[in-house]
Amino acid sequence: VILETVEDFFDNSVIDEAEICKKYNLPINKKKILITGNVFYKNTNTSFLTLEKLIKKDQDILFVRLGGVLNMDGFEHLSKYIKCLPFLKRREIPNIYKICKILFFPSMYEGFGRPLLEAMQCGTPIVCSNNSAIPEVVGDAALKSDCYDVDSFVKNIVNLLTDEKFYLLKRNEGLERAKIFNLKNFHDKLINIYSTEINNFI
Image (cartoon, rainbow, N blue to C red; front, side, top):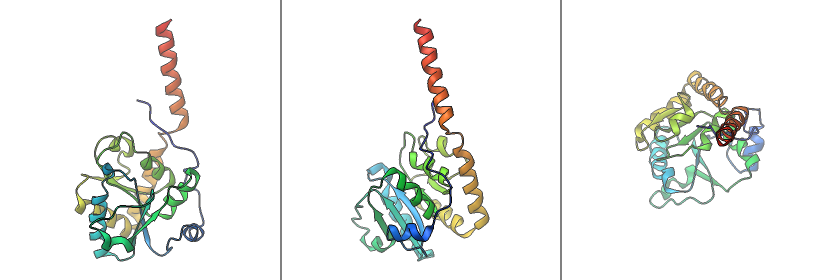
């Protein structure tokens, strides 16, 4: 298995949060939670159900979604709690992770899940599902639940938002976990595979 990598501009360098929020017309005073994806297995209905319960506890929560227009059939009442951003250039995306408190990733299935690694490299804690390749990517750095367990998702998100020490712990665990997905390891393993195959062929 060769672990994927993401670009090194996904990092935890300091940004001007107010400037970024202004650029994308996002409120700086809201607790922003990032969601991604526009296909069925990204499990947006569970995201909506989780948001419904979260705003009963905290009206200052805002879901920020990357990926254009979101189908909200049946959940139109949540529209003021969701801000959809268009598809952005890759170099813009790290700033979105950094202005968001959490990546919420309740996917039904992932072959890898690049947003998980992007978030960890940016120092953004993760609440996610526990299936397919996701645990292999996040290890113990993320808070994992069954992809349909709305109550667990709500609990994990609230814990991160209300416990600063716990939040910093998961942030630091994510940054540490991300180190194993480095470009040198990727290149070394890839070169080793080619070298082995060439030697076998010869």
